[in-house]
Image 1: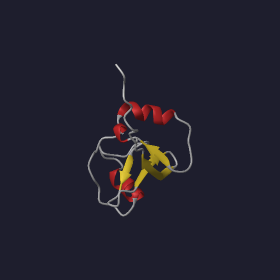
Image 2: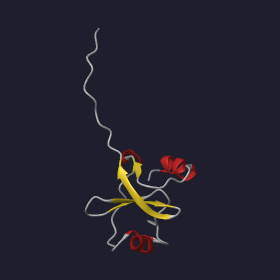
Image 3: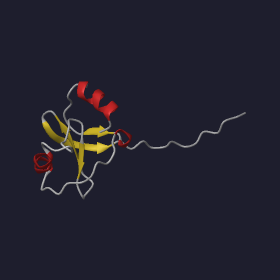
Length: 90
């Protein structure tokens, strides 16, 4: 997660259920080969690439898990749909 959105995330109230995350708030930081999110967290713990609250892990199926204070929870990318173009009169 980029630094600015991370600060907002850290102070936001905890919510349960699926969290919608914005792709623009993230940048790819590499990959890790692990059986599950907790195994990835364990592998990265104590390294320069350690997971921080607000980080997202995505598996090969495109499913994502958001790292929260309470563990990993299901998340989905927020997709903003473009509405129909509205003609502008000049």
